[in-house]
Picture 1 (tube, rainbow, N blue to C red):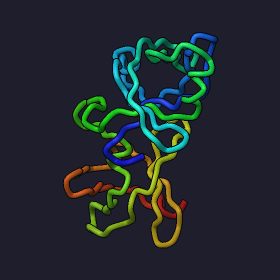
Picture 2 (picture 1 turned 120 degrees about the vertical axis):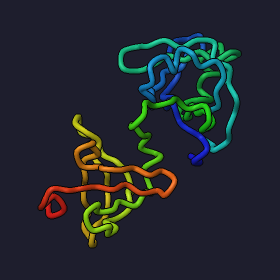
Picture 3 (picture 1 turned 90 degrees about the vertical axis):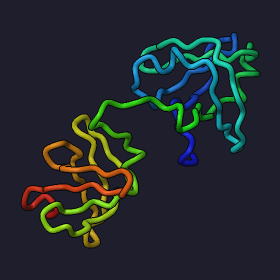
Picture 4 (picture 1 turned 180 degrees about the vertical axis):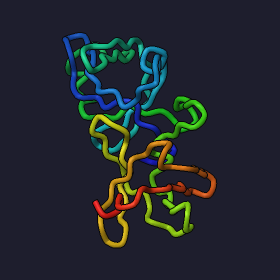
Length: 172
């Protein structure tokens, strides 16, 4: 997906016989799905289409979406595997000091004490604890927890994250 678009749900499949769709949320901003009235979908063929959201409600760990004008299983089938997205400027807002992982991907991680670049954030991993930044440091894959005690400063304009790492972390 392009950087100016933010995926907020992955549409899995039709659900029921009235054109409803089962979706996996890609946002944890409270009220985001219920309040969304208009969105866009990236269909499996790569094309985009605008949709009007007539309803959205939680179902287990997923959401059920109802798009206006989609009233049958056959009509809903078109959206199987699609991504529901909004323009970047419509994504949710975070409290001061919190960051979207997508904004930090591609940032250079600097050692705060030496100023030396360690690597670039290539991606993220999550295992129930804090998110882990994926970097390649001196030819080795490294995971660095993104926690306030380690990341000392984030500068989105300069695309840098200053870290102060405990001795031995890069050797794990």
